[in-house]
Image 1 (cartoon, rainbow, N blue to C red):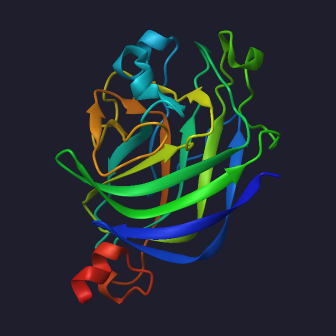
Image 2 (spheres, rainbow, N blue to C red):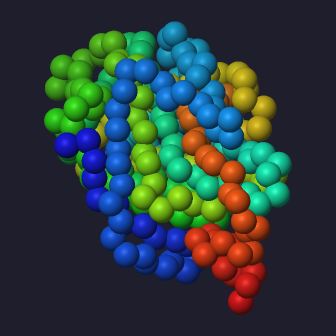
Image 3 (cartoon, rainbow, N blue to C red):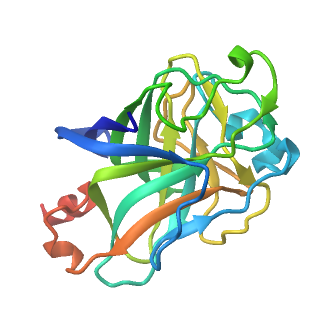
Length: 245
């Protein structure tokens, strides 16, 4: 299967609002998504571990049960009605690496950074079977180094997330505490000027803090312009709901 059921939850501060079970898709591809007019992307990656974020520092590049979760900040455009975030994409490295990829429950968060703090705007969980078509493969039972696949993983939200214009947001991905590891692709320089790579939490679980890293992930944030003013949209994010109360 290349799709999973996702549980959508929204968070503001320490309050979490559990939504109904949502069906969403997780897909893999050897080719990058083609960015649309409103999408934000960096497709420049590393040819070796030293070219990756923080020279390949494993705490800054690996999605793993014994590492922080990995993310990327980005800045939305100028559409006055805001945007609907549809999906986020990451890439596994193509250079030499380690990989152990069993059945995994991913958590995908949409965040709003402020200094070293993170407000969680939306969070979904996705179960992905190890045998999912084109999934990242385990290299030599996870014990030996080998070439990474360089494949892309895309998490498509069942219910798009509303974002404000000209605002810095982020997204991050973790694989929980099941033993696993694979290395995200990125580049040590900030080729995308509207954001940068970050990590959060520990042991495969994010928290409300972030650590920024020089450089950018290989990523695609797929968005479409919203057609109505933010205040009138029924799918407003938690931060917008709070302003209405």
